[in-house]
Amino acid sequence: MILNVQNLSVTFRSKGGVVQPLKNICFSLDSGEILGLAGESGSGKSTIANALVGLVPWDPGGSYELFGEKVNPYKKKSFAFVRRKVQMAFQDPYSSLNPRNTIFEIVATPLLANGISGANAAEKTKKMLDLVGLASADLNKFPHAFSGGQRQRIGLARALVLEPKILICDEITSALDVSVQAQILHLLNDLRKELNLSMIFISHDVAVMEIIADKILRLK
Ligand SMILES: Nc1ncnc2c1ncn2[C@@H]1O[C@H](COP(=O)(O)OP(=O)(O)OP(=O)(O)O)[C@@H](O)[C@H]1O
Ligand SMILES: [Mg+2]
Image 1 (cartoon, rainbow, N blue to C red):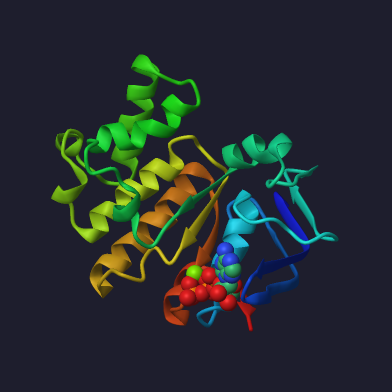
Image 2: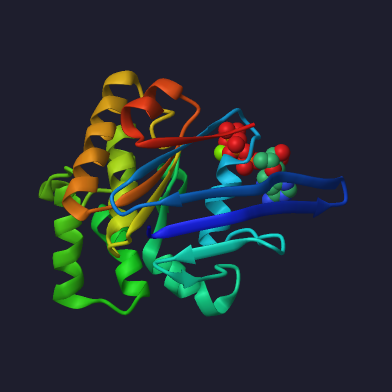
């Protein structure tokens, strides 16, 4: 078991009132395993993803273990450790791809931010772009030159370039048409084998989830 979550609760407090989308959620993940997160809109799927990478705080009483280590990603002490192990890919990578940067620069950014530069960074970047099925001729193009499916590949390359152990995919196939969706699902399966990656796959689409997931957690 590489991830063990017990009693994850999240409460949002604002002027409008108090919402608790997650109450005592428990799940675990083995190495190479794909967990599907299903549930209607607003059931808290993205909130689970955000809680796992430290974008929202956990309510007291929960426990989060990553590779046997107790972590609290919202605290600075474990944030860097969690970020090395757990990365996210999003439904709309375009909105987070800087239009002024080439694909090569975009995918290399997490490496540079972590002190990896020069030939080493270039090699890792090229390898990752190759792994997600982008041609080396694409390296110097800008995001606008790519289709939705290709942008998802770029988003995946950027999420994976630091070699995380767990990839969270939040609705990454939801905006794609069916044939491109199938290609991305194939790619995820290949990446899982190639990189021994575990995944948390979030989707509205139960049919897609049943294809890809080893087990499914349904939120109400
Ligand atoms: N930062 C926030 N502040 C306040 N409320 C929030 C915040 N983020 C999410 N919520 C609320 O928490 C609930 C769960 O939202 P969440 O985005 O996790 O749902 P979801 O299952 O991902 O939905 P969808 O399928 O539409 O993406 C919703 O009621 C939402 O309004
Ligand atoms: Mg969501």
